[in-house]
Image (cartoon, rainbow, N blue to C red; front, side, top):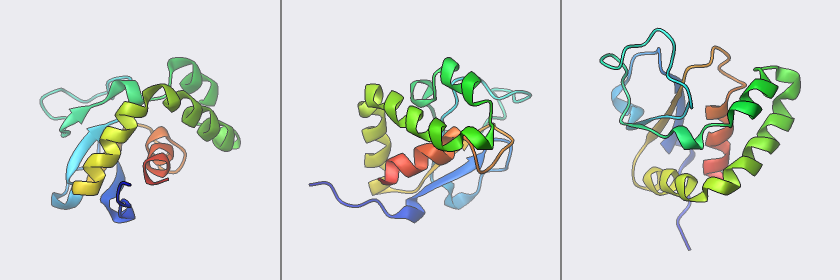
Amino acid sequence: MSSKIPAHNVNVKRIYDPPAPNDGFRVLVDRLWPRGLSKDTAAFDKWVKDIAPSAELRRWFGHDPARWNEFRRRYAEELNQHQDLLEDLRERARQEPITLVYSARDETHNNAVALRDLILS
């Protein structure tokens, strides 16, 4: 049985915000490269494109808060195809803090927030 992940070990942050020492391992969880950010200035340790929502799901959601609960359900369903990637993030979060970095403007309704909940569940 794997050990429980401390909630404070899984954080979310916009990629445009400066990194902090307590961010730990920074994982970009978007499928598309963040706009206006050069590869030289992007501060992350790993880019896991395949854990991001599909293009179809992302377009359907459109960051509409009214679709948030259904987005979370559909995203969790999509991640059933990527249990290995989800487990890799869980395992790292058991060892050290991780920060899921994303580019969306909405800091409450985005894939990193949904993914954090899935990692901790």
